[in-house]
Length: 327
Image (tube, rainbow, N blue to C red; front, top):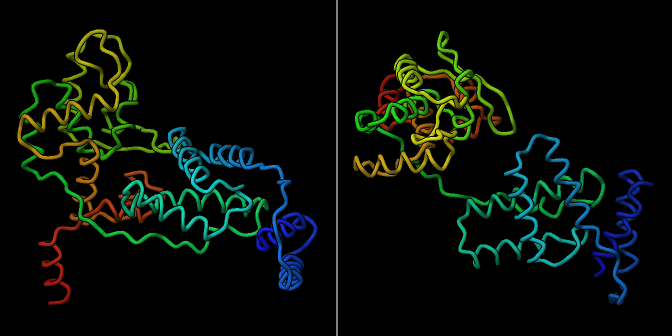
């Protein structure tokens, strides 16, 4: 209770004191209250957590976060508030540690998921600190959750050729080549229109996460298959990829995922998923010596660490590199 009082008084005085004054006030309050027993009264200060969360989400929206991301933020924060049941201004590091531990055990969550929760809460409380709503973020002393590094699977050259040969529709063949040669996200692909494709330069502009615009490129095989597919269509839908049946509406992410999964099951290929094409391209590019900074730009990553997580260097090439540079 003493910690809460000290924190509350300091928060109220923040607009009137510099950093030295804030630190000194905190020291004086802690020393003064040391010998006193403090109990809570029945009158509670009005909880402004809802308005603070709303302001935080508005700030994130202005920064360019998608509605999907904002919804994930809201759900994560609401779950935390239900678990701790305290005003945001009064939440401590110990509260959050206990919450994360209990939440992980109750939901049987992976370390990666728990760290995602930690990152969102860190973003919230860091914003509250930056905006002078709280003195210091209680997440500061909760470090990144250590996770095991796993090598994620990519498609082999044989698997890619099997999928191409197994396509019975021109659309599916063009779709597979588009994912494989550009490395674009499936969400980016389904938003493309016919007029977005520059066949002369074999490129197109996509809008990635946060509505960030970037150029991606496709190879000659993809160009031919795309042209064949578009020439075979008789509909007037502007979308690049549409459903096979009338009224031939724009294909959505779920439609692509289902189609690829069915193709994989038919051909006996394990775990066929659109995102796996992106990871395969990244791995192949790194394997062939593409500079990581250029791959980062191609994939549309804001941080190079994200790009490195996609790239898995083949062990056989590590051995050859060792022989070339060291052995």
